[in-house]
Image 1 (cartoon, helix red, strand yellow):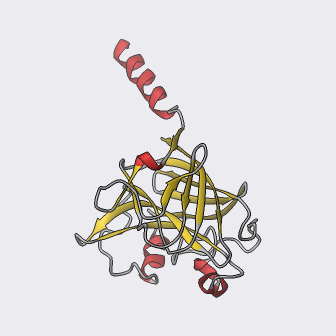
Image 2 (tube, rainbow, N blue to C red):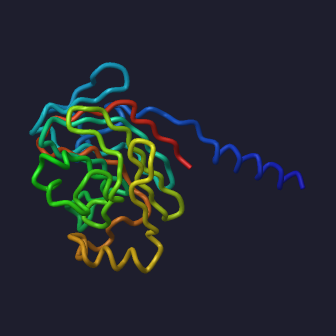
Length: 211
C-alpha cells in the first residue's frame, strides 16, 4: 500500500509539470552550435529572426507529450513555422510535423490554400475554414497540444486543426504528402524546431509544458 501511494504521488508530480519559457539558449543550430546569422534575443522571452542565413534551430531536449504556446508575427509575404517530433531522417534531414506560420493573403504558398496555410498541419491536413488569423505584422497566439499521439493546432484561442497519428487516416494523409517516402517521419517523440525560410519573424513567450 505504501508503494502504491508513493507511485501515485510520483505520477501526480509528473502530470503537473510546471511550464517553462524557451529562450534562444534552449536551441542550437542543426550542427549543435550556438544560434547565429540573424537569430537574436529581443526583449523579455523574445526571439527575432532578421531574415535569411540563420538556418533552422533545434531544441536541446526531446519531447513526447507536451503543450507549446507562443506568440508570433511575420513581415508581409512572410513564411515560417514551428516543427515538433523532429528527428534526423536517413541520417541527413531534420524533419518533423510543422505548425505553419505564413501570410495567407500575401505569400504564394499561403495563397495556394489548404494544408499550406497558417495553423495547418503542414502538407498533411488543412485548418478549419473559419480560423481566427491576424494579418502580417500583427501578433498571433498559437498552441500545439500533443498527447498520446493525438495532436492539435490552436490559433488565437480556437482549435484550428487536429489529427490522431495512431489512426489509419494519419497513414493515408502521410501517403498523400511530401513525407510519403520519409521512413521514420514523426516517430512520436523528438526535438522542437524553429524554422528559417528566409523571412523576418518574431517569436515571444514560447511556453512549454511537458506532460
